[in-house]
Amino acid sequence: MRQLPFKATLLAFAVFCATAQAADLKIGVAEALSGGAAQYGVAIRNGLELAADEINAAGGINGNKIQLIVADEQGKKEEAINVFKKLIFQDQVLMVFGPTLSNSAQAGDPIAQAGKTVAFGTSNTADGITSIGDYVFRNSVTEADVLPETIKIAVKKAGITKVAVLYGNDDVFTKSGYDNFKKALDDLKIPVTTTETFAKGDVDFKAQLTKIKASGADAIVLSALLAEGAPIMVQARQLGLAVPFIGGNGMNSAKVFDLAKGQSDNLYVGSPWSLSNATPENVKFIKGYNDKYKVAPDQFAAQAYDAMYIAAQAIKAVKLSGNLPADRTALRDALPAVKWSGATGAFQFRRATDKAGKPAGYDAQQVPIVSVTRGAEFVIEK
Image (cartoon, rainbow, N blue to C red):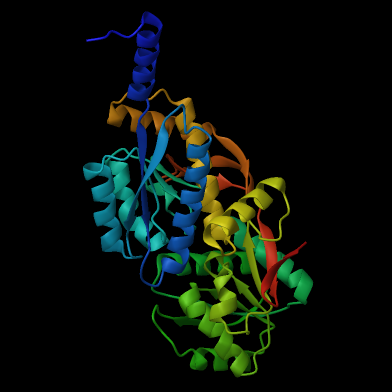
């Protein structure tokens, strides 16, 4: 048998060592890919995949390639629990992105906390999510931070003096939105003419909107997901209610233009991200997303895209040992120090507290951009 020359043998050994040291970084993705929340979850998965593909194409993280383990949590609390258990204990992922809705996060994140595995929310904005524990992170700016600014800009631009409030009363996210809207309205001393509610799955909102119309409100403050929020806008216009809407995070999606069937004008929303923001990082993201998916991105895709890069910075700073529990904790310890400037602008984490005031998980610290819908686009307001 012919032996390789010494130099060739040495080179082959070096290649073998490099290959042996490189490994797939298994990262869980728990998102709503079916059901009513899929309009958010699919965009989130796409944003994560786009960023992971870019990172892998550039050589990965310290030579290791990202492998996304994607699971559909259907926007349901029980499925979020099942999916988190599978990803953490069966698939042995390093961390988990998701779930999509705040309701699901309230159910799934305690599994991650108990398993000492980072749960990184990119779309959860309800109060109390990060109080679950110190393995819970999010780069989605809370409604408490965004809504006051959204109201201020809407009042200034539309000359609003009194509002009606309409919110979903059976969902963690929409109820939290209502609480934060109410506080902001109280702080700004804006009178509320009437407060109306609805439930998830409702399709007829004419009774509530008729009361709102009779109340003489200058605008409707709406805490809703798109499935109910878009039909509310359509039915309001059908009743002759041409007043502006002030929406929360759930209404900040380009899908509102399709779902509201041409009745989406004058919707004010706040977010760190806007399709109209022409920073180099955002332009690169928008082009990459358009090229890959043949559709314009939304806030949820942008936040997911940035989240992958934020996590990558933390993983890069960690010397992975192959001991999964130790690596998971090391990643938890590295994440809070990450600062990043991406599609959603300059980002850093802020420590949250639990109900007892003790340090818990980590929230996003970013400046919101307020936009209003005109035609089929979001226009930045200042």
